[in-house]
Image (cartoon, rainbow over all chains, first blue to last red; front, side, top):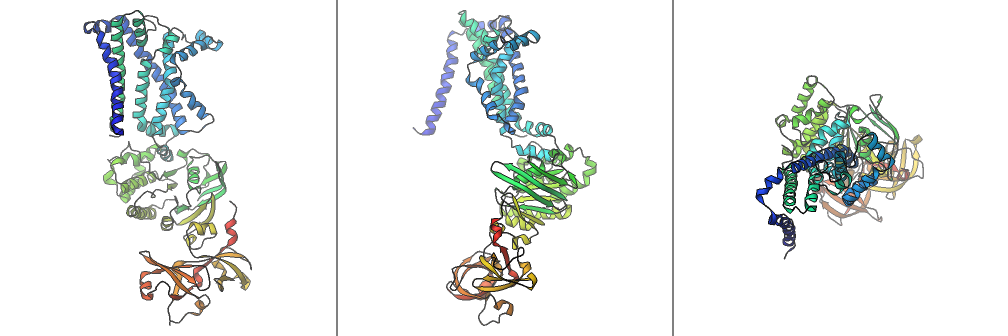
Length: 258
Length: 371
C-alpha cells in the first residue's frame, strides 16, 4: 500500500468513526417525538440561550482578540512570547478547571467587589457569557492572528506612505484582505462557544430556564436517563455545529477577490 | 533637497553610525550596495516605518523624522509592488489622492498625464490579479506618483523581472522621470541598473556611505571596498614612487615598471612610499600590433607577455594576459571586431599597454576604513 493510499484510509477511518457515533444515536431515535422535544419550551429556551450567549461571547472575543491578534502579528513588544503562550492556555486547560478558576476568582475580594458593585456572574447569564468568552478568546486571537499573518505588512506600509493613518490602512486594506479568515475564525469560535459545557456548568450552574444552555440540557437529560431527549438535543447541537463548520468551508472556498 | 543627517540605527548586531545622505530634488538618486548593507533599513527610516536611535530627516528644510509616515509626503514602491488586490486599478491609483483628501479636479491633469505616460488607461477597471508583470509595475508606479509625492522611494522593484521586462521598465522609469522630474531614491544591488538609472549614486557598504557621485563612481572608486563591490578586475597592489610638480603628478609602480599619472587620477592625496591599488579598466587595455608605431605616451607602460586564455563572452572577447616574469594577470576585454583583426591565439606572445587616462589609483589604507 502506498503512502497516499494509507493517508486516504486514515482520513476515511476518522470520518467513519464520527459518522458511526452520530448514526448510533439513530438506534434510539424516535422521529415522531423530534418536533415535540424541539418545540418544548425548555429546549427552545436552551437553544435561544446558547445562541445568544455564544454570539455575545464571540463578539467580545473578537472585540478584544482582533487588536490583540494584530499586535501579535505586526508588533514587537516585551513579553510578546509570554502573551502568545498564555493565549494557548484555554486550549490545553480543562474547561472545568477554567470554570473553577473563574468561580474561585469571584470569591476573592476583587471578584466579590466586581459582583457586588458591577455585574453578577456566578449562576447568572453573564456567567455563561464569561465562561464561553474565557474558553474561546485565546482561540479567537490565535485564529485571527493566523488570518492577519497571511496578509503582507507591506500593503499597510504602502497605504501609510500614500497618506492613510495606521487605523485607515488597517480598515481599508488589511481588514478586507483578511476578512474571510477573520469570518472563519468568528464562526469557529462561535460554534465552540455554543458547544461549551465545562466552564459554563462550573460558573453558571444548571438552573432550568436560567442557565441551561444546550450542552447543559443534554447533560441534564442524560442524568435523568431521558435517552430520547438526550439524542434529539445532541442532534440539534450537532446540526448547529455542522452548519457553522459548513459556513466556514463556504467562506474559505469562495474566490479571494471578485 | 532631502537630507538624512547623522542617522544612528542599531538592529541586532548591525549598526548604522552617523550616516549622512543628501538627495538632490528632481534627481534620480540611487542607493547602491550589496545585500545586508543596510539599504532597506535606511529606506524604512526615511518613510517612517522604522524607529532609529537618533538623526534627522529633512525634506525641503522641514524636519520630518517625528512625523508619521502618512504625513511625510513620501511614496513607497516595494519590491513586491504590494498592489492592493481587492481594489481595481482605478481605485489603486486614486488611493493616495483619497487618503490625502486631495481633490481629483486639482489633480486631473497630473493623473491623466500619468495614466497616458504609463499606458494604463485600458486597465482601469481591472483587478491586479489579472495584470501581466509589466502592467503591474506600471500601475504600481502610477499609484506611487499619483499624489505627487515629495520623494518616491523604490526598493529594488525590478529584481524579480525577466531581462526583457526589466529593460522595458527601466526605459519607462527613465522617460517618466524626464517628463515628471520627480525626486527618487532607488535602492538596488544591481550595478547595471544603478549605472543606467542613477543621476547620483551613493554606494553603501556595511551601513556606511563609501562614496557618492555620478557615474564616475563606477570608473573611479574611492575605496577598495567599493572597487571590490563593483567587481572591478585588474587591481594591482603597487606603491607611490614619486610625487612631483607640487603634487600635480604621481609616479606609481606598475608590474615592475613606472607610470606617471596626473594626481586627479588618484582617490585623494598620496605620499611617497604609500601603498596603493592601481586599477586599469579591462576595456581600456590596448594590444599593440606588431610593426605599428607606438605613441610616446604609451611607451612608458608597455608590458610584454603571453595570452593565457581567451573566452568568447558574446558581446566581446575576454583575454587573460600574463606579463613575462611576473605572477600577476591582466584581464583585457576586446571588442569582437578588434579581436578578429588581431587574430590572437592562446600561448601567443603579445605587447599590451594602458593609456594614462585609463589608470586609477586607490590608497591601500582605504581597505581598513573603520565602519
